[in-house]
Length: 182
Image (cartoon, rainbow, N blue to C red; front, side):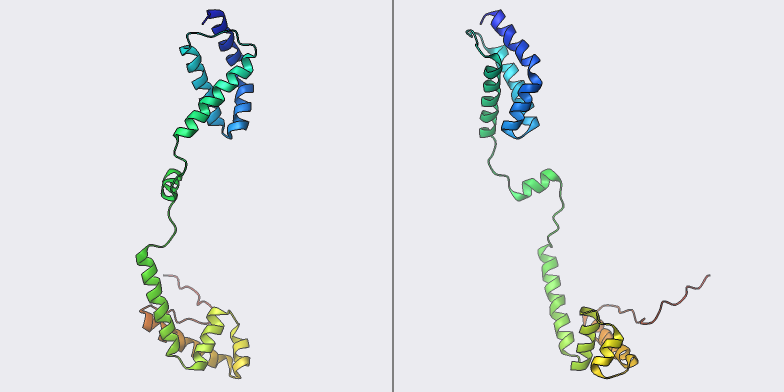
C-alpha cells in the first residue's frame, strides 16, 4: 500500500472518529462495541500491505469497523445463563433456598393445624383481626360481644398459635406503657 493512501485513511479515521463512532454506536447498539471496532479498524489498517485508491474513505472505514464488530459479535456466546448474568451484575439471589421453602411449608402447615384446633368464634376473631385488619370494636359488633371479650379471645388464640409454633407471643394489647428511666 502506498504511504499516501495509508496516511489518507489514518487521517480520515482520526478526523472522522466521532462521526464514525456515532454511526457505529447507532448500528451496533453499544458505545463500547463501536469504540472497540474503531480501534480494531486502526490496527487492521496498520497491517494492510496493499491497498488501491479508496474513493470514499469514510464509508470504507465505517465498513471495515462494522465488519470487524460483526465478526467479534459472532464469536461471542449467544446466550448467557441467569446465573452468569447475576454473577456479572453481582446480584443476590432473592429466591428462597430449598431449606427455607421446606421450613415455610412446615410452618404454614403448623399454622393451619393450630387454627383448626381453635373454636370457630376464636378462629374467626383471630383471622378478622390479624388477617383482615378489622378493628376490635367492629369484630365485637359482628359477634355481639363486648370489645373486652374480643380482646380476651384474641389473646387466647394468639397464645395457642404461638405455643403450637414454638414462638414467643407479646401479650400487650393496650397503649404502650411509658418507659421507666433507670
